[in-house]
Amino acid sequence: MDFNDTPQEAAFRAEVRAWLAATAPAHVVQQGVTLDDAEEVRLGRAWQRAVYDGGYAGITFPKALGGRGGTVIEAVVFAEEESRYTLPKGPYIGIGLGMAINVIARHGNDAQKAQFIEATLKGDLTWCQLFSEPSAGSDLANLRTKAVRDGDDWVVNGQKVWSSWAHRSDWGILVVRTDPTVPKHKGLTFFVVDMKSPGVEIHPIRQISGASDFNETFMTDVRIPDANRVGAVGEGWACCMTVLMGERLGSGSHKSTVTPLLDYAARTPGADGGTALDSSSVRLALAQALAEEQGSKYFEARLRTMVSRGENPGALAGMVKLAYASRLQRTSGLALELRGLDAIAPDADDAQTREIQHDYIWSTVMRIAGGADEVLKNQIAERVLGMPGDIRMDKDVPFEQLR
Ligand SMILES: Cc1cc2nc3c(=O)[nH]c(=O)nc-3n(C[C@H](O)[C@H](O)[C@H](O)COP(=O)(O)OP(=O)(O)OC[C@H]3O[C@@H](n4cnc5c(N)ncnc54)[C@H](O)[C@@H]3O)c2cc1C
Image (tube, rainbow, N blue to C red; front, side, top):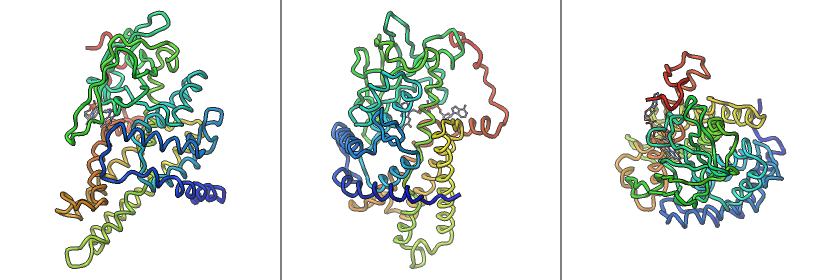
């Protein structure tokens, strides 16, 4: 199998590279500069609009829905080239592109596709994900936020948590319980909710860094029109799986985290006068990380091909996230060790060390968000390797009878 670009792909890559060289520099955000949230979202929308105007938004989406009608490989080529620039692409844009429009395209009706997909591709709509609750994270199907039908509307009451960037989102993707009389996975229904709806209250969660990327989202008698239900009543779990598969598959990086380290190690003084690259243990760690990264890249390409054929990679998608997060933790940890004390307090102009610090902290987050390591390992053990399943006492019991 040849993983190099075909002549057509090489031509597409050259076209994208030229377009990015002309367009991206004006949108690049400086590493280490903390932007006001509103300004960050404004920049994110502007970049997404530029991508749309350039004809590269929603590469695999049909032209009729505002996409390019291109191939998965073209989408990967674009993402690889785009990752050469530091662009404003936070969750407010990523949740829309990577989750909301996928679930709407797969489970939504024509009116929903027309209303939401192109507007999101243009950067006009920002999105948040309203899944997790105080007692429903890894065990998402344990969620308690409920919706009751009232005429043409549903009335929603409950609380979500860890809603990234909900405070700057126009719409949310929401999963709620609509039938407590059936087992927990079966009584869920999926909606899109206008975040300006009366009864939606967003409380920021303050992080140790001082930033507030997450929120608690309280919903009190929020009325959602039935027209904003995505998929059938009771089929919310299937919609969640579509979202989570996209999140896990998209959680790798198109940018090598290992290659910059070779350069970093070459510039780091070694113990005996040379550079860190003279150390066989450093070379071994880098070689191992590079081999894993290459393996992941091709594995990811295989899964993307499955998706493009309409196949569902299922639990295999979790392997992409699992491998990426632990590799990022090891490589950024190694880089910090190479830097020694300077890694703790780098010079103001040492953008690379700051980026590595960020990667190291982010890697721990990546091991939880979108499915914790242990949970993904359980799924891989059961569904990929066919090992015996965990004991699940609550699987067939009506939700309302669970203690
Ligand atoms: C950066 C970030 C962004 C996020 N953004 C969003 C968002 O926008 N919207 C949203 O809805 N959620 C969001 N989340 C929440 C995320 O989905 C949950 O944190 C995640 O699903 C884990 O749930 P939990 O935090 O409740 O941990 P728990 O489920 O309580 O897990 C705690 C620990 O127990 C372990 N554990 C749990 N179950 C098992 C098991 N069966 N076997 C073995 N070990 C187990 C886990 O591995 C974990 O270490 C975000 C989280 C992070 C970190």
